[in-house]
Image (tube, rainbow, N blue to C red; front, top):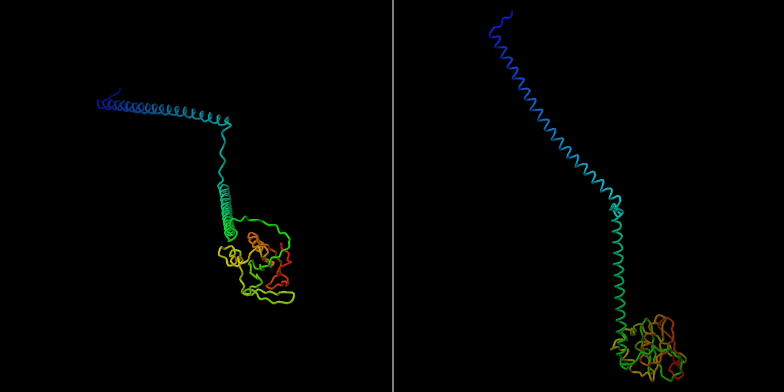
Length: 274
């Protein structure tokens, strides 16, 4: 029926063998690939499971911390820092610091001025104590009293906060004043170049004014001060100096100017002193 040749049988056999070998190779390749994929997949699943476990533990720890923070009443949230508000506070504090610094400087200057003034007054008092004739003499604050005297007057003018020696011992100071007489009055005018003595000059130990006064004894003379309106306070300071040297003093207010009138009986005898 069938008629196969040897060549046909050999070719068929070789084809079958080749087919079988191809199947074996394919099967081997598929088995190796599947095993590798299965093994890698298992490792990935193990890692994923491990990461999932760690993640669950971390979430549980976070929830526990949140619960503790929620129950802890001592935990406070820090306020948000406002830069503009803090800068405004800083500028205000700096302004207050500058104002306080200025006040301290003003107070220091006022204190220094007061100390200088006090030192000046202390020096003036010391100069009074060192004047001839009043050393170791107590300073007495006298209350003016009215009484009669037979002492002779010495006249002074207080004007422009300076004192001028006008007359004493029956003689006028013609270097400083011009005198015009009448039966009832003496008209006296101070010259334009008259300088007089300031309080500081009087307080000087070498004062010419003090030397002039020392020529007269307070036992035989008393002082009359003709006081201009601008020099009343100055007169009171001068009067204290005369009181400290045991002088009796009176004063008469004068109108502003350089001329005044003195009655002819101003030489004493029946004058009233304060």
